[in-house]
Image (cartoon, rainbow, N blue to C red; front, side):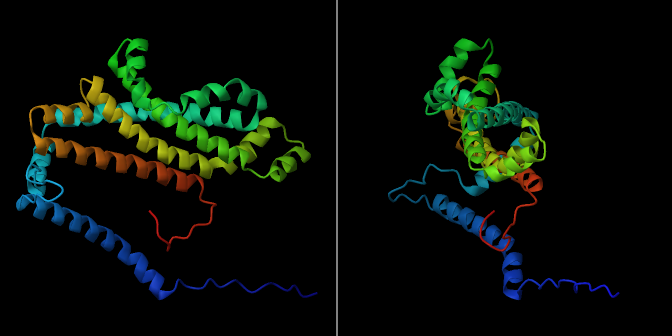
Length: 280
């Protein structure tokens, strides 16, 4: 008896134009950034005053010099550490509680009826508007800022998780139940893995909103941190220092967002991806 085996599947190589485009993407991105910096330098060097006024703006070289000074200053790194600690603490709390609440509201009518109305009333309130509430509730500014950061990230994670859970096809849950699995088995094998892409969409939004709110809270009620330092630079008319703070916030936000997206890609590696298409 002869066993017939299928010939090995040959994977077609990536088309040459697609490979070239993929290799050029970092170059294009770097050139776009350099072009923006070059335009900024020109506008500030010649004190352009059209509809917008650039005569008071620091130049790229001024900001670069100030940024270099800050890198050698221990106080700068302390501010970075303080802001990162607030972001990480608030964001991790929001991720855990947001996913838990989203799954509960998405799968349980009781949870949707009991906590859903309260959450929907609170959701439109900007997190930064809760600064007075945080001052009244918490004994220290540090705890209040973490609370603001948590609130900012919580609702994007909650909403994304709720929609992702409700969008799951019931056939997978029925299959697990048919094979004798219980509720916890369904949650671990179907609900959480199936909702992961949506959950990480909410986490990506949440980390960005967290940075917006933590910087605002530091400016309003903080005693240290990147936001506090940036506002202090503004009060003493150190515009190069202000832009150094803005650049620092942008870099830190990009770093944390990238880490969240990389973790999401790692945990959802089974998703089909189109690497050659536009996107991050």
